[in-house]
Length: 93
Image (cartoon, rainbow, N blue to C red):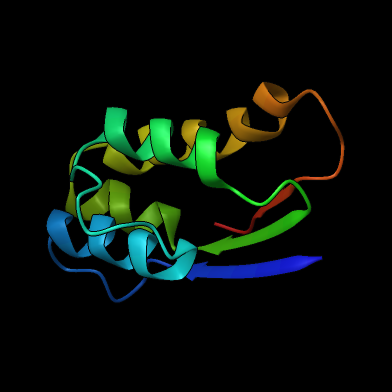
């Protein structure tokens, strides 16, 4: 199983969020820095056996006007998109 840990607590700029996710998922540099690009690449490139453990979503909402909810929804929808139960997403905050 591919364990991927995301902790957004220390992200102070929205571009930091995208760069951090790209680094953790080893996405290519040309992946766009927006929600649509993030969804497209995660949908297409996320390991089918990933366990994604996420902290700090509430901090994103506080810093970026609800952007955390949008990112949270992307990760919540990811296992549904694959239609299997191999991808696990655990959101702590």
